Image (cartoon, rainbow, N blue to C red; front, side):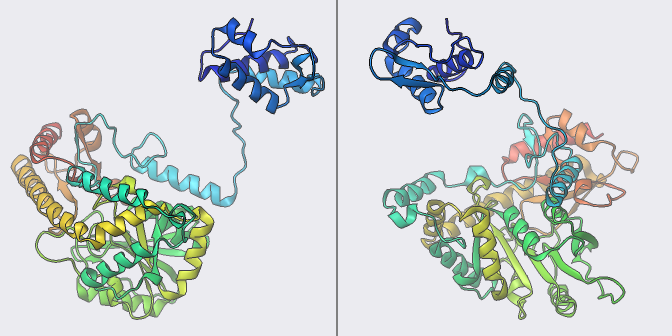
Length: 498
């Protein structure tokens, strides 16, 4: 009598039951087993189900067929009893024993340490980029797109069209740097709107900003190399740099962005600087032209590369996008990082790097080693979305709707908090940094926890600092929310923090 465990397809249950009987010697080597027809009748299953179970047992060597009347039998040559009984005991356990002393390489140890440090600072229960529980009704988590504004029907038509007329080349492995059509469309936009004179040959398609930062870290940094990072800053960048063992050098941000350091002769040189000049994360300030030129001059004198993370510069509500730092670079010092996660949706997993000529080949080689290229059909559909003008139309619509959400948020904060709130940042992007005071004028204890209990998801600014500030700041993302949800969420937040 076979005991089926009730888990998964029936043929797999039959396979596991026979395997257990054989491993425990209940079925002896050479013993005949029922025909598939008899087995199907006994277990009240289709004959195909019985055939599939036997085929797997035959393929793995538990059974073998005999010519003539003998039929199908348990394999006569089996491993030693000790091996079988050791294995059969493990089959009876619901959970496998996990080794706690697995030895990791230095890179693995650093990566785990960096991820744990970031998840701890963000108050996450596990190593996950999911920032707040989905049960929270008024979620001001930063970094999300305006999902309601995405033209899903149009995107599905473009993707379906590319799938229907896909050639063998489209379905095969693509170039590691990405499809030429998308790189060409991106280059045209960057020349027209961001002042970057770049062709497709210097553009590398990646699976979002985080992969871009990982490639930069692995290709350009050795353990103990010094990396200049804004304070406060994007935690994903911190994690990438820490994972390769880099030494982080904090550089304060004021009302005009990062304060450019002086080149020091007494210390090891800085290898890399990470900045968000068009909309500093999370403060929202913009780096003026004087400091941009000063930063480029600093990089020239120190021999450092600059990573320009241009994560949401398309969203400006009082003028056109600013010229990118990469557009001012005459020496090949700036690595420009762009993404479509904020304009369309993060699950698309498409971003890009604009690289100095000297870095194109090593980055393409690393990309090929890591994933052999990004999904092709999505790249082609996005190229069509851009080249037909639909991308610009979508961006104009979302700029209008996000500007309205931002106004609603600013008005709600001022109404609910009054003099206890200071809104920071330019009229741009998809989030606000708000400095808050308690009723007595001091810091607010456990603002994150109190807000979550009130059904409001937010981030306190502490997690974006290596050395937290001595005042309470919250980062409020607003793109996915309706205006009425923004007003109600801020009302609840003010009540919770009173």
